[in-house]
Length: 398
Ligand SMILES: Cc1ncc(COP(=O)(O)O)c(C=O)c1O
Image (tube, rainbow, N blue to C red):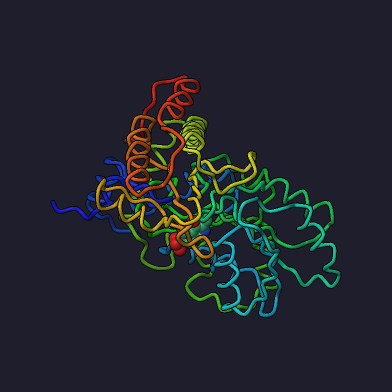
C-alpha cells in the first residue's frame, strides 16, 4: 500500500495513528440503525461518553468535526446580539470567537499572550463589570492546541461563582478529553464540547456535547438562533429511544465504542498518567536541547502536546518539511501568530515511551540537520523521566 510522507509517524496534535482494534471496528457489517442492534449501539456509546465526560446529563453526538460542536453549543443556548466572553488562550480560542461572530453573537475577547492559561481573576473582573448581564456565556478552551497550554476549569467556575454571574460555562475539551482528568458535572460546566480525533484515537468525523440542565433551560427560554441540524432537543428526544433524528455515522459509532472500550480496559487513571509521563519526557528533551517550550506556566503544561519555540532566524516550517521528507514524521506547525515559530509535538493517543523516544530521536536529528543549535541530546533526559516515573510496563492501547 502506498503511503504519504509523514503518515508513518503522524504526531500532529491529533489526529494521530488509529489503533488496530479501532480500524477493524470500521469493517464490521453495518446494522439497521433503527433496529435493535443499532439502538443498543447508540445507548452503549452515549453511556460510555457520559462516563468519560463525568456526567449524568445528556450527551449528544453529531457527524461533524469539533467546529460543528462549537456551533451546536452556541446556537442551542444563545440569541442574536448576546455577548460571550472568550479568554484568548491562542488560535482556537479566537477561532471559536470568530465562529460566534458569524452566528450573530458578540464575542468579548480577553486578550492573552498565548503562553499562559486563562486568568480566572480577569474573567471575574470582566463579568463583574457586566452589570446589564449581556454576557451569556464564557467559552473556555480546557487545552489550547495551538500553544500546549491547559487552563484550570475549576478555577474559572469558581470565578463565575464568586461574582455571582449567571453566564453559562462552555468548555472545549477537544484536545484534553481522555488525555487529562475532566469532570463535567463535578466541575460545574454547562456545556462541554468534544471531538473524537484526539484522545479518543479515531479519525475525525464526530463531535459531541455534554449538556447540563442550565444549558437545556437556556435552549427553552432564551435561545433564538437558527439551530437546524444542530438542535439538541430533537437529538435528546430521539436518543432516548436509541435513535437519531437522521442517519447516524454507524461505522464511526462502532469505532467509537471500541475506543471507549480500549480506554476503559487501560483504565482512565492510567491513561492520564501515561500522557503526563510522555509529556514530561518530551519537555525534558526540549530543555536538554536548550530550546524553549511555548507554555510559560509550569502548572499549565499540556498533557496532549508540547509546542517548542525555535530560536529567532530558524523557520519551523523548514524543519517540518525536512522531518516529513526524511523521517516520515509529521509534527504540527505554528498557527496564527505562531506561524513558522513553533513545532508542535503531539504526544497524545496511541503512544508509549519507546515510540516517543524514537520520535524524539528523529526530531533531534532533523533539528540538527536544519542547523538549529542544540545544547545537547534530549534522549538521556527523556529516558530518565520515563525510567523514574515508570511504575508499570508501558502498554500502548493497540
Ligand atoms: C482545542 C480545539 N478546539 C477546536 C478545534 C477545531 O476542531 P475541528 O478542526 O475538528 O473542527 C480544534 C482542532 O484541532 C482544537 O484542537
